[in-house]
Length: 362
Image 1: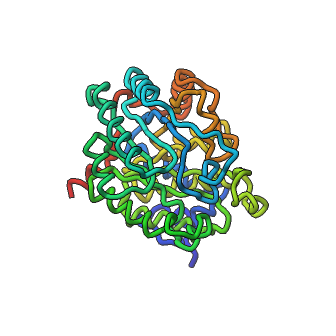
Image 2: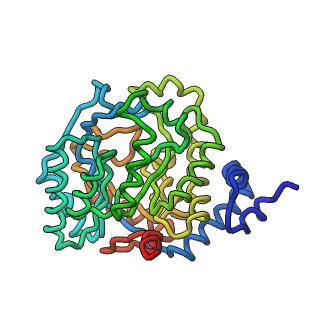
């Protein structure tokens, strides 16, 4: 006998088939899912929404991922690398405005000069914020030694998106070489956990060749891996990438948007106390996209505080929102968005993952 959505939502654990049913839900069933995920969020992480001031400080990248606008072989990109003083200025802005945390993100590099530079920046950010600013970094695959060095310098959260837990699908969206290996990605996530980072991952939703089966497996992968935080968003194609040739095979942007909300909702029910980010890409599809994600399960939002002059050059996908706003505009806008989503801003708090604390205590 087929279970109803109500019956599935009463369960503590979901099977893969349950997850697929939830991801395919529509109308009243979808509504029931969102009510459950919203209630779960309120019960386990409360109304608090935490800011992570995002600094996309460089679009220089050695990787050549087939979906990404800043891939190494895209010669149409204006490459930039923000000076350390500018990054520290953004950190001071985040500290002064009580963001609680900062995210440093860039294209991927692993040369010694880059490694040393990040280590130095982390120490400086800790110094200028009296050790009060939490730091998340998202700087790709590195050696365990590098991760340790950055952890010791002050970073305590790391986001490394798996993009897909299905190795075959991963290989379809990356070049087939040593530099782009699914095994390496998994190994890096393990290193991060072993070192003691709050470890985050995520997937793109609606990529070519992806099935509901893949997405259900992605959520089960995150649960099994015991992840602390997740950032996942809808895939938005970029016309300067090889994946653009499959644009006519994609589900509509609106369907990708709805599916992303359902992924967030199901994951919130499965992993009740993790941190889930409301992705900027949601706003590229729906002007109220980020609020909708906060309402149904997300509890992290990342105002962009990259100096405005360079924002337009960090385009992983097209039609990215907020590229012409200053940091102050972004803060005011975020406050309004969070209020609309019935959230409360956790000013001056790191907003660490409760799941991480419990995992550590184990």
